[in-house]
Length: 193
Image: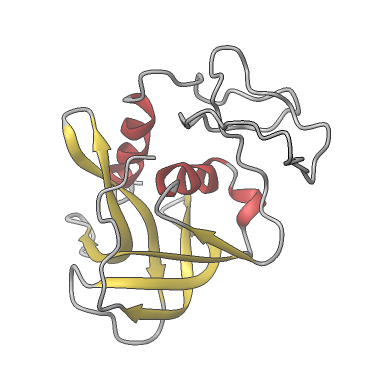
């Protein structure tokens, strides 16, 4: 747990700095956890009919009128995009059972963390996110595979299966990589949602 404390603390700080947020562990009317992310109100068009896979999906609560409820993933590949990077990664940590065994694909910078007590090296693909005092937190996942890793701070696309592993009596999430490609063009290193 000692080695993941900085990463977990980052996620909790990210969630705690929002001006309006649901209480930790809050559940929507369907009984599933949701993450509230401020989004602009859509402009309705009389010519467009919006269809949804879940016709009885609960409406956002009055406390969060522009909340986005992230549905459980459908299919085997979950793309984590820049626009909702923090919301999606937090949803995966909060609802891991919905994502275990799914393939995640996302971009970020490659980093390493060395546990000062054990000397273990943990590899991560991350993006910077806002903290309480500016951009001072990260979001992403630990990654593992049997091939060479890129240089620190290389911009990469990580693709692999989300799994859990146990260490020192605690369970952790990580992505077992199928590919880790260094990209020439960097995406948004700093993300807000």
